[in-house]
Length: 455
Image (cartoon, rainbow, N blue to C red; front, side, top):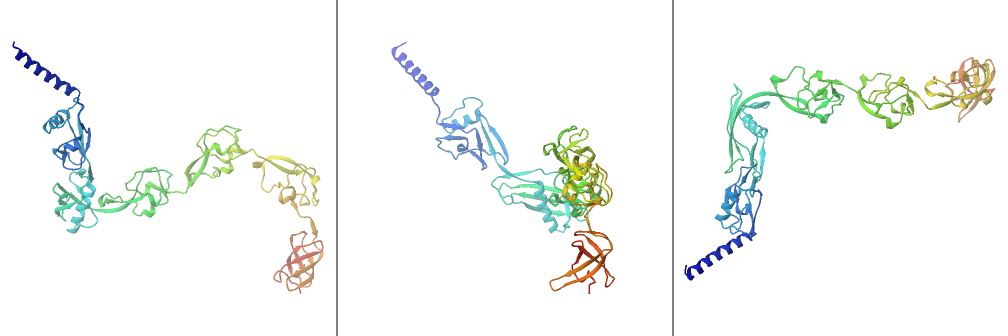
């Protein structure tokens, strides 16, 4: 081998090694966008790559349909980069770009509403609804498109109820979709329904009611047609949203909150607010012996085991707060005036006190016994009275005082009377009976001429 050939071979080998070294050490000036969102109908180089690009606006692929996406693989991206002289190579087969084109959805209901308008203009009755022969699904258009819907070739057969049309969306655009629709029209009636699922013991309010159009043939005879008849009622069991409500599905209720044990309560526990939870019941389901007022439970104790969540009956609890009650210290005869030495105090449970039992010493001291009271007996209001100042048959002075006059006359007591009590007095001059208030042992008072016969 000549020196000339050896030198040429060395130059070639050196050039190859230099090129390889440059390739290995190159970080590239352009980076791939792994996730791409496009709004136009085409994908450009600027959508896929970021960095120093000669033609970033160059379209290299059609964009996905609105609302859809696709993936561009590493081999396809490498070919694009090589074709347009972009300084980028995939590191591995996982270098790829996911391209998404956002869109907006036009529902089947929107399309039917638009078709219905044109069919009504052609003579279809206003109360008719439309049923499709086959579902349309959702129609997706570009996110920036105006969602106009146009109806072409509408047709309605009044005899059979059949209809057809071609829908254009978005109307008047180069990328508009033309969708054939066909089906049948039928008469409907609006009925009230619930806009949410409602369970038993839930009071139905006006905000829970919406109106739905139901085929006339599908309306049952017992369906509630007046929303007013739903308000204030409650489901017997459970009513689903958007369904017809029948008369037997609802009942008239008056809902009340009932206090119940939050946890199991055992005998001897002093009940406090921390022990109480609440449940809602229909008042017609609440018996008279169920406690409905929490104040009637606080401070009481269970007579027996009370399970959590169960209504509490009056007989299930008893009072644990003691009440001091005055009782006779000795036998008291009828007509005796009581002093503080005639009674002493005992402690009783409030639920053991019968009606009319006196608990305030001021209601006992200075009062006269109407009947005999035995030692140890409690005092009742009907057992005592104010001491008699004027006895039956006594002659007293009747006084009438007004801002304009003062009159007096004589009268005869027709019954016993104590201080401040109203008693019957007979005017001895007119022999008429009047009602007067006892002032003292010799005087009674009347307040007006209408109640007195004084002359």
